[in-house]
Image 1 (tube, one colour):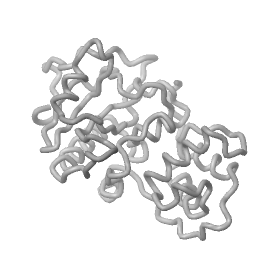
Image 2 (image 1 turned 180 degrees about the vertical axis):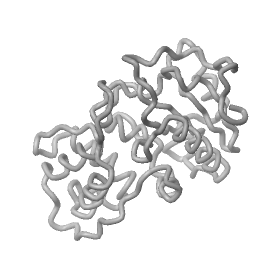
Image 3 (image 1 turned 120 degrees about the vertical axis):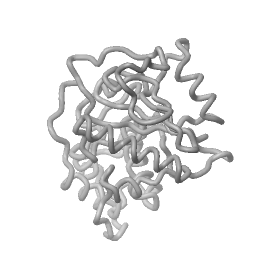
Image 4 (image 1 turned 180 degrees about the horizontal axis):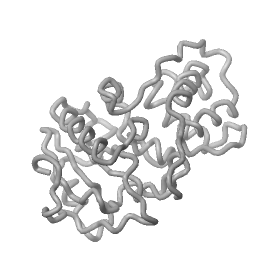
Length: 248
């Protein structure tokens, strides 16, 4: 927005959008990092018809917010994804891109100006659409194994302190022995993760474990089923279980 919330009269900067399908309206927010060297490069890509990608907003390092797609339109940011039984995440979400190179030697934390702008944007979008804080998620949450953003440097606890996201309050269990896969899968499904119910630590379940651990228990990431991590997930699932949402 180069300012505050985009008005109905403002033309979209990106041509990459469409109608939300099946009467869906925004009931979640998906956070991304751009993975590019600058916000200008990301802006060019998000507005390029040939790229066929977009987001509702892009936030620069200095806190400048670019409104690219009206909130009532379906932006193309989630791809193949799922959360809480919803598989057409684009139709159910608002996508926010944060200018950040992502992983690798150029990686850096998200600056305070950028995070402050995100908090203002989130507060307004959540209020306008009645979006619950447990439905503010990362791209890695909805596409585990395929995406990792907004990445390990993103401060989820900062958002949770302002009730713009969630954070577990338990999870001090010993890490030995590890919990069985079935226990992890049950809690993950109840919270919203798109995980199979196989009772095994298969590749898809391991991908969900890594996405969960990177966000909520980084010290657990290398130990699938670490009891401390599963306890945290069970706490999240008990306090913020998936509620019935619109059909995918």
